[in-house]
Image (cartoon, rainbow, N blue to C red):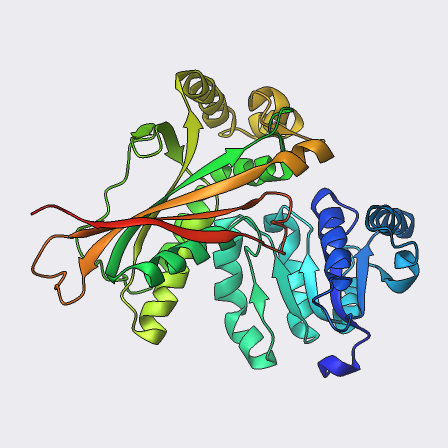
Length: 389
């Protein structure tokens, strides 16, 4: 079915959920942007018409557009009903899938989109799902001429584009990058919705399956250019940022590595090694995280333990995650900075015969709220310098 024959260019699936309501608001805001010459027909989809209607009414109130609910289509669709998924996909050129955890609910949406000729975009931060979908559906999607695009939000556009931005700013050959995520909060503090917490719980519990999937893929190793990037300790100190850091456990490393593989194999670009970390402040934060980490690693090993972790995220995360998620004030006051430290070689210098002689620092910044599909951020180069000698 041709795109122009479909009633909707965009369908926000799961619009009444925590993430979906913000995506709906941002899509509506984008439609009335002065920079947009024409608006695109779009719809929201979910199980309950009344909840979808309330989401549109709240967005209309925030944007001062009382006619919004009558301008947006509503599709009743249930993740457990394949026929309803097919019907939704038949009406859309692109489905924005906000229903997670994706390891449980993502594949039926992908399958329905491919079979019915719609592209699918999600904000998944789960490496196992992302890599599984690629291996199972890449060729089928290509045959249908549609796109299945994962991690299109905070996970992992800032990281992926940040590495590419750093590569482009490097006056030479970039060989390795470390990124450090810093979250900034307002006076009411920072809180994260428990959907991210659930993904971490199930991801850790099933990490052996991810390893098995990667072993069965039989991919050729991406060549290492320059010295191999050394991984930091589970808790390390970053002198440049004057902060302790821990490994970032989201999808950034998986996504960036797959991008670098594609650029190397298809465009013959020099691959960049990558490691991701998140800053955690001082000693007090480290102690809290150590206790939270010990509890997490112990309970995640058992079925009953995982049930407790999922049921009481606020307790086991020491207040970082909650079922309610952040308040509107917390969302509005939150932002992020992703700092990249890269090293490589100046032009004309061979990585095979010498040590790296250039370092570069870049940053990507943006508001947390707007990083649901519609990612707005700014990149800048902090500096580039040569090693002495």
